[in-house]
Image (cartoon, rainbow, N blue to C red; front, top):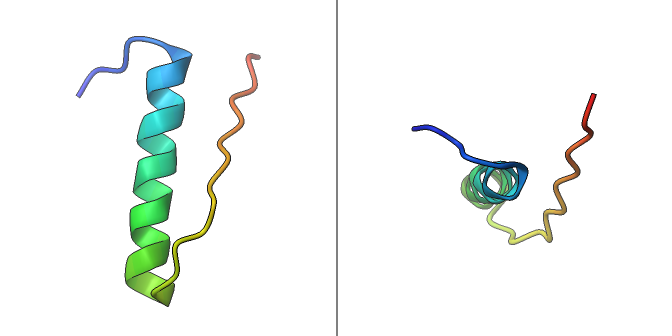
Length: 38
């Protein structure tokens, strides 16, 4: 799956981490992704 820009990458990462946290801890944390342009 290709990612076109930083915003799409942020959404993809946030969704993946939130899904993992829910499966692991049965909680729905607020995920705030921060992309640092190097």
